[in-house]
Image (tube, rainbow, N blue to C red; front, top):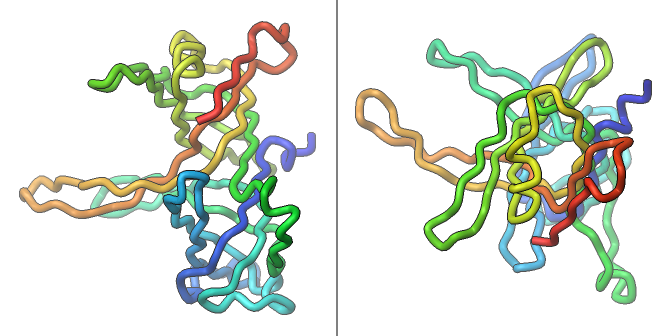
Length: 220
């Protein structure tokens, strides 16, 4: 099985932080930096990129540089304060300097991720006070060496209604974008901490190898 087909991502944005050392595996060092990606609405997402030192020999990743990153949206567990916390990051497999082309920029997709995985938690469907339909979906995406990434996703409108009755274990293919959002974490001692969550905002979803009338699509 080609696991890279389960999880593919492309981001184009501006580097907004210095690279910081993350970890080392079998003598290969990895670093993390932040990439600012602009939405169509002109708001921005700040997305963490994890990258091997071996990809940095021919590309400048200093602050302010614009780059194109291809890779996967991955997760891992971080144990802190006696609790597990799900950490999400983009694992870069390719990176290159991005050069604008006025003719092509009008059709440019700066943030797209495709995932094929399995529902691993019952989707939570709700409506906002303004009547907007939302569903939270946790997707398990298989990776090589018997590993899986657990990716939080959010569906809207018809997609939210479509997935609200899906059972745990159901396979689904989604296309969307990686987004960041800030929230306040309340601690037991009464203090609060501002944290950033990352998730996939679903643009389209379907059940693989099913009839096409079971697919839905919504642009958000």
